[in-house]
Amino acid sequence: MSSEAMAEKMRTALVILFLGVIVGAYLFYVRGMGVQPATSAPQAIHCVAPNAWERYDRGMITLADIQQARERIHTVAIHTPLLPAKFGPANVYFKCENLQRGGAFKIRGAYNNLAQLAPEVRARGVIAYSSGNHAQAVALAAKLFDVPATVVMLNASVAEKVAQTKKYGAEVIFGGDSSEKIKLRAEQIAAERGMTVIPPFNHPGTIAGQGTVGIEILEDLPEVQTVIVPIGGGGLISGIATAVKEIRPSICVIGVEPEGAPTLFEALRAGKLVTLPDTNTIADGLKPLRAGDLTFAAVRRYVDDVVLVLDSAIVEAIAQLLKQEKLVVEPSGAASFAAVRSAKVAVSGPTVCVLSGGNISSDLLRSL
Image (cartoon, rainbow, N blue to C red; front, side, top):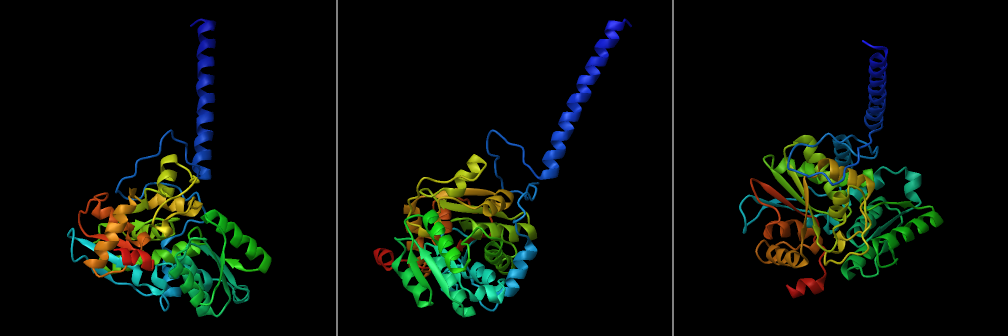
């Protein structure tokens, strides 16, 4: 072999070796740091066992967190009934969080958060920001612990939710016309008064508390195949999905958002958190402009699909639940059943619709 040919082979070998070192270093970084390689389009989500997403967010909760939350809240939160639908598709069941204390699932996460605060911290008071249901839950939890509570609510909050929050003893402050504005106002007041903020969805304690709904579903209907959950900021579906997927990975978990507030739907499409310019829906509890990093991580890891429903479908679902099932459910809580009624989710096997709340406005109730 000529000296030129040998030199060429050596150059080729060095190039291959160099490329191998570069690729190896990249893979070590990706796997070691928990970084997910970027893709040009969002990955498809299917009803299969959880994928191999790394736990890149240290705040992601575990089944153990949810089980511990249940121990904290079991004397306060009701184990709500799981009722078979009397009308409509077969194999549909309703998880009736509309019958929960405070009229919605929110007491689970709120009480779990307060229970974990040091007594001296809790005594300084707690503050929340909410369109209504989380406001009532924090007010009720604070009353049970006999500590002061302040809640910053939307200017257009449902009157009945405001009245009930005050009835539990909380101070109510109206802080603006968007979820971001009331969040900022609550954080400002917390800093001024030395109070602790109780987040409505993007907090491990909140998510773990809401996840107790999932454990109850599995206890009451072990053969469940699909669980359908309304999505606001994502705390409820994050907790439920974590619980049921860790216990039975084959269960399909589907989230539902209004077409006028596709917060997590758009985030999943983009492959990252997004802030919506505006939201417009009758479901006042499902309209945050932005989800949280913890809820987004949990949804990407555990949730099989997110579908959108029209407000008209939500109203029709409320009417059927009231007139045929004799259940009073607010728009946010009826979104799960709206997805079934409008064929956004096919019912195949035992399917649970989580009715997340029942705090409906009197005006809407009279109009049905």
